[in-house]
Length: 449
Ligand SMILES: *Cc1c(COP(=O)(O)O)cnc(C)c1O
Image (cartoon, rainbow, N blue to C red; front, side):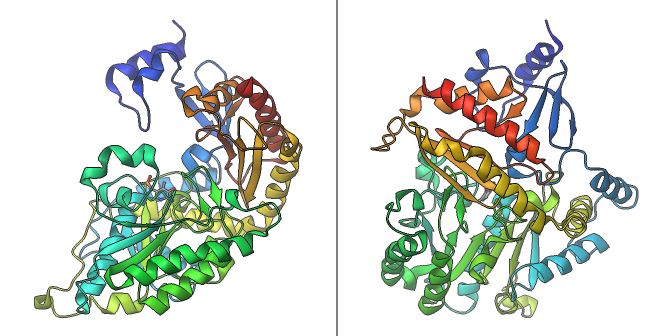
């Protein structure tokens, strides 16, 4: 038995893996990782893999980053954790100050949670509770987009729309309202994305007209529906949405958990529409893939609706044990420092141009329907028929063939169904991007055979 197999066997005795049909591992090896270094993951048998998916979109400055490591160990030697109710600490304060500074103007209060789904739950509860506090307890529903994803806990799952994750649990979920998303995969060839998204906004306008009176908030993933096969839309949709939410008296929740921290080319995706949501949820890149930490930012106006004498029972009595964990906050501060030191937002422009150039030839491929890109997210959609865009049957699991091929060629790609995507750490080199593009090219050949 090889060392990898040894660990795999021990693993399967005791572990149940996320988002996995465990029976798959009768055929598919589990890969034990011994060490991470920059973009590389190393297994126990000397094989290595470029982490092209940033370990589920969290890792932005590479594995085992020396500067973040130092911040983490310094913090651990000083204060590993303290209750955040009645107590506070320097990293939580400084991180909140910096987030207020760099997020869109008007987001002035930070509420800590400890993972993305929890940050969504916080936003949903806060929005509902705000309306209740100002005498509008008739507002108790949420509007979200088709193909959206906001996490896996019951509330977050309720506002999502990825059938694979949601359908089974339908009887348990909140009854939400869904509006057609402005998915630019469906944009006609002779139309610009902004025009298409403007037209598509009518679905949201109609939904708001009908339901605003009973609705707390609209929740969206700005610009890219990541778990929803990396489908993208134009910022103009966010402008229209901000205006409509104000006009209809409904909150806007921006779920920037996946797209925040430079993913779409700007620090936050909302910047591209120059809007301020009423709630912004961040996590994932916040700690550069080190520790679970999340923040729900909101406005002073919403904060003020909870601020009263104790007996009024208006307070937001929500908490998680690891709220504002000092290790997480210190790592997040080190992450923000790296953005400044490396001028990351600007230097990413070169990398996203390299991603675009390296895969451009695939647009002619008879099984590629579309290559789409927003900043540091690039997706390549495989189809059975380029002309009709007929998809491959999902049961054929063609993306899985690309995954397996990539593992044999020093790359961790993890296609979403038939959509291959790159979402690499920002420290990747142009040579490594070229390598990934080569692996994708040969992987598609194998997958479509
Ligand atoms: C990952 C993700 C979440 C959930 O975050 P977790 O930390 O996995 O709970 C929510 N929204 C979006 C857009 C995400 O990509």
